[in-house]
Image 1 (cartoon, rainbow, N blue to C red):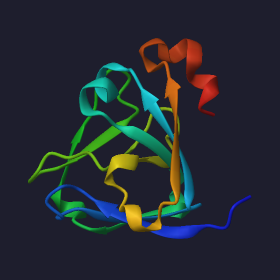
Image 2 (cartoon, rainbow, N blue to C red; image 1 turned 45 degrees about the horizontal axis):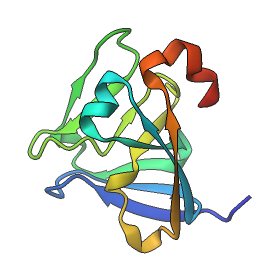
Image 3 (cartoon, rainbow, N blue to C red; image 1 turned 60 degrees about the horizontal axis):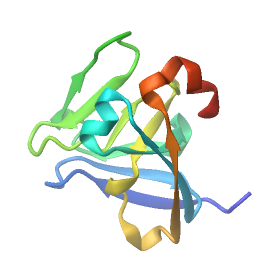
Image 4 (cartoon, rainbow, N blue to C red; image 1 turned 30 degrees about the vertical axis):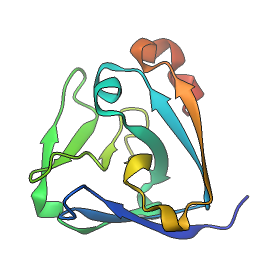
Length: 126
């Protein structure tokens, strides 16, 4: 397993910031569900211990739909969703690969996930 390093990132305006522990070579998933297809979210999964909000927690607004399990979090100022608590990993986080600063990322391998047919395919993410 690759050595973990600290990645930093945040929303567009910089009000919301985070840190995430992970390898320099990241694995991300591109999902075609109704939410991800519209926002262009690239999922990089992290456990609760690997992720922390470092600024702007009070500047987040939450949106839930369907089962209400996922906690979609958006910056109140710029509207960017830099991370959220996903339905697939309710005890962890999904960080938007597009919001991670590139200076610590050596590579990002992106795989496709058929989230439009979530129930039939969720075992691929777990």
